[in-house]
Length: 330
Image 1 (tube, helix red, strand yellow):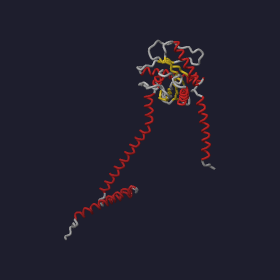
Image 2 (cartoon, one colour):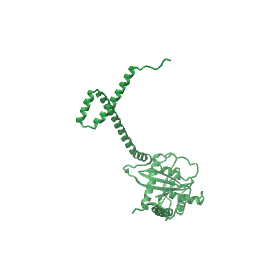
Image 3 (cartoon, helix red, strand yellow):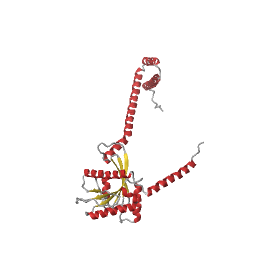
Image 4 (tube, one colour):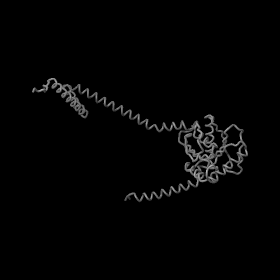
């Protein structure tokens, strides 16, 4: 049998030897380049002369260009990372600016510093205008008809004039459409949602069209509010008379010796233009700020006082229990 083995090709052997030489020169050139970077100039130049005499100067130049390119890419990556960090650190400022533009009513000359927040509780009968007033205060231009009566207190918030405004809308806690247990629970729950306490109670009353009826409705609602939340609420109540249509202006009701002397008369319609809504919002805020200034703070219910006392007692007990578990330091 004849051997089928291929004979050695001298050209392939020469090509393999040439590739090995080029690989060796590449490694030697790169090592010389890296080594020369750590040497002083007096020793670095003889190495370059040696490379030029041995034919490695071209390889030296190629390695230099390659390293320079890599350094350029590294510098570009550092520059892009700095830009990305700047954008990331500025994103919170941009979010605040967008929130101010969309949700606040910046007055001319007002400062951009954050102001203390306001907390409001809206009271009133079912379908009496509570939700409409809440939408106006929150800057909601599109109003959606509710699918049913509100059954529990809800908390919403917005930013107005660099100030957070919290609005808590309650169900019919002053009427008789709910059982007493639910009315009591939701009244107290609205205070919890408005913690540490509301700055004003916006008492919404629907205009009936006659002065005696309006007087009776407002006074009855005020007395019911005082009976529900306590006598100290009298100074925090702002009656809001909602007029849904263009009726004749109603004269101010007579409160006799009651603590509340002022009330708001608002006309909120479905087609009210945004300019009028801003005017209504500003008018309500002026009344709230006046009440806050007169009362020098916010309303505090007995429930919130007890909650604070319970929290302090619980904090003391938990602190003592945790201190016993921690190792003592001598």
